[in-house]
Length: 308
Image (cartoon, rainbow, N blue to C red; front, side, top):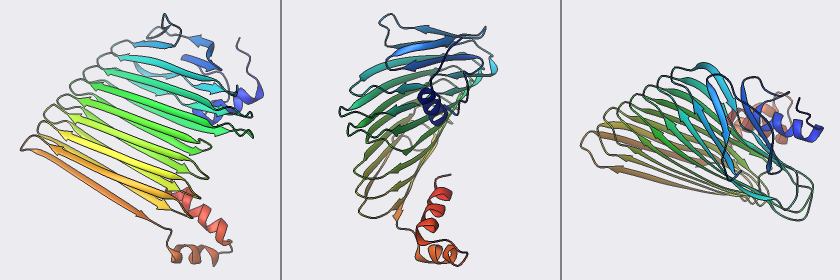
C-alpha cells in the first residue's frame, strides 16, 4: 500500500484531482523516483531502462479505462528530464491524466522537463489532461517545460486539456502533431501568469491526410509584470480544416504576444486564425460592483469565469 504525506496529497489533488491512490493503471513520481505503479489487463506501464520515464501500452479496443501519471516535486534544486511514450491501440478510447506540481521552499530552482510522445492508432480516441501547479515560500523558481509529440493514424481523435493557473515561474510548452486522413485534434489551453512569471506556448500542427482537422484554442490572463507568448502554426498539406484562437486578458503591466501562423500547401486546405487581447471592460466591473462586490472581487469573478 502506498503511503503519501500531506504535501504529496495536496499536490496530487491540484494537478490530477486525486484524493487517494487512483484505481486502474497509474504511476506516481515523487522527487525523481516512482513511489507507486500499477498496470491493468489492458494497460501496461513499463519503466524505461534508464529509469527516466515510462512506456505505456494500451491494447486495441480498450475502453472506459484511465491512466494517471502525475509528478510531484518538493526538493529544492532538483532538476529532471523524463520521457513517457504512449502506444494507443486501434479503436481504444481512454483518458490519460498527467501533470506536475512543484512545492519549492528553498533557494535553488526546481525544474521538471517532461517529454510525452503519443502514437495513436487507427480510429482510437484519447482525452489527455495536463495540469501544472507551483507553490512554496522559497526564492527558488518553479520551472516546468513540457514537450508533447502527437502522431495520429487514420480516423483517430485526440482531445488535450492544458492547464496552468498558479505558481509556475517559467514554462516553455512545445507541442507538435502530425495528423493522417480523417484524424482530429482538439486543444484547449488555460493559462494565468502573475508576478515576474514567463510562459511560452508553441504549437505546430501538420494536417497531412485528407479530411483531417485541428482546433487549437488558448485562453489566458497576464497579471502584474508577467509575460506570455502564444505561437501557433497550422500546416495544411491536404484537404483539411484548421482553426487556432488566442483570447487573452491583460492586466497591470503584463505583456502578451500572439503569433499566428498558417501554411496552406493544398488548394483545399481551409485554415483560420483569431486573436484578441484586451483589458477587462469597465462596465463588467461596474455591473458586478452594483451587486455588492468590491472592485477586486469583481475582477476575480470575471477572470474565474473567463478561464473556466
